[in-house]
Amino acid sequence: MTEDDAPIRSAGRWVSVRLQHRHVSFDDSFEPDEPLPDGDCADEESVTYSGIVITSYDDGEKVSERWIPLGIDPSEADDERLIEQLRDALLWQAGRPPQAAGE
Image 1 (cartoon, rainbow, N blue to C red):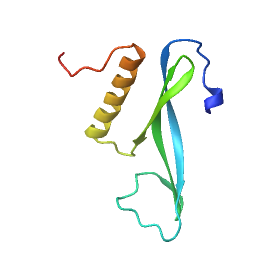
Image 2 (image 1 turned 90 degrees about the vertical axis):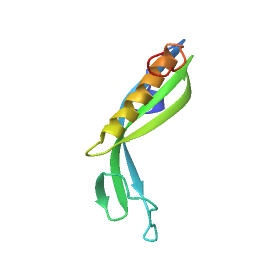
Image 3 (image 1 turned 90 degrees about the horizontal axis):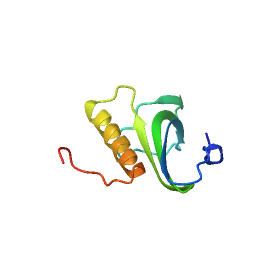
Image 4 (image 1 turned 135 degrees about the horizontal axis):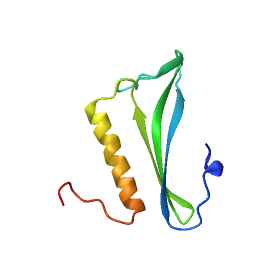
C-alpha cells in the first residue's frame, strides 16, 4: 500500500497499522557496525526483512510514521516494544497523552 492508496478520512486523528517488507542493498565495502537484522538474503549484497509500520494522521495529513522490524524469532523485549508503540499510537488517536502503567 502506498501513501496514495491510504484510506481517505476527512477529519480527526487516526492510525494505520500494516505489515511492510523492506529491501536493503549494500556494496562490497559495506561493513555493518552491528549484526544485520534477521531476514531473507536475496543475494550477498542485500537483505529483505519484515516490519510493522504505524502511521499517524491528523485531519488527513500524515504527522508521523514508525517502522518496527520483526525478527524471525522475536524476543519478549521485541514484543514489549511493539505493544508500547501500538499503545502510544492508539492513545494519540484517542487524544489522550500516554500515561505510565498504573496511573
